[in-house]
Amino acid sequence: MKLIKIAMAIFLAVVSLYALKSFFGVTASTVTTLMCGGEHVRNVSALDPDFRTKVVRIMDDLRKAGFELQVSSAYRSQDHQQCLYRLSRFIEKYTSRSGFTKLKWSC
Image (cartoon, rainbow, N blue to C red):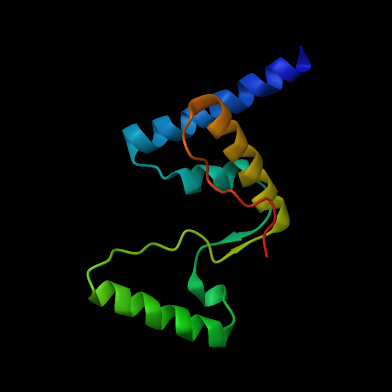
């Protein structure tokens, strides 16, 4: 019975993610940041300076070529990554939609 309650709570949270995104324009990453513990940094300024220079150069070239870019994550703690992984497996299992990540471990 406890497992069913946990599954229902996760299901409602996932449904809420999609509802918030669809009806209110709130992004899934905003909601997952609230749901998942650990650290999550979206700004490329968190990257190693040498690597950041290369990433920014590539992003600038892609923007000039007409692509729209959004950094979804520059750094995720292991706790945050594990939470996203578990949510993703649940989303894929019960909604047949792609989850947030296929990676169980962050680098």
